[in-house]
Image 1: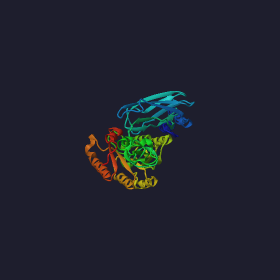
Image 2: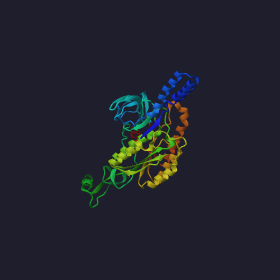
Image 3: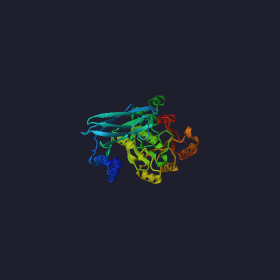
Image 4: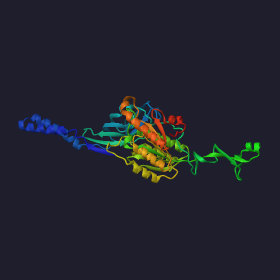
Length: 423
């Protein structure tokens, strides 16, 4: 996509030229008339010249694709003129991920390139928790006079993944038809002991308790707790109120999307079915499924869908969460669990979760805490109290709620809670 326009750089020269010509005629001064003629040349030239759309290739390299949070990531971007015409004046602005800050150098660069020539520039960013995809680089090419310019966007896929494996997704027990890794409430074949019962004709020989038979002469069969595939939908809170964060850190939506990416990988690794949805300004629904193609689709949506836009929405944007819950309920099957990732900065999401739980969908809330700040303790105190109250309300409604301090990896929080604790 390109955008061609005039810069009006020489508009002032034309005004001065006409003024000088008028004065020269009235005062009968040949020198002023000669100078005005030269000015006319400068003023007319941009109207006769033009600039074609540049053909550029952008290559971006990062010093670390999987950095730890808080570490420096060096970025080197190389721009090459792959067209057959020189670019006399080229300005490039690299597409730094919105949630990351440049700490050294600049992502802006200016140069001139002959056909086939390339130029590079470097800068440094600070890594923040989550997955961060670079946006398209913006390039502006001007003609020799500077009177015309063309703006183009050049895509090149680059991502910085500052997440860690959450270990085990916080799923709650349920019974489905497909064998997987989620413990069910029924007995059968599996790996975890469930109970013993009297032997029945047709029971596998390998499950007979021969030790008990040797002691008592009684034939019994060992049953193990079955592992069943879970049908799980990850729901991200991207409502306007969730776009808040501590000073100098990414806002809660960035943290929520990063957590959703980790949870999605873990759920799918456990041979479960995963779906994706959102509470936010844009609708999103990906039905639960599994497989490599579905995994790639989940990753793509979390990285690129407009519902997860890192830039906060306009201040007047509102979201009808209640209506979105009704739509979500119509899409869910009876046995679907939900993992809701929300900072709990508004009552509407709490009410949404309570409604989903009341409709017999087992809900787990992962809540990144962005309300505590040593530098602004007074201003955050009320938000902290309100958030704590919402956590208590959820737990009183039998909703599993995980309070996640974002300064530590989500995996550490879940491990410390031994898989998830009810309130």
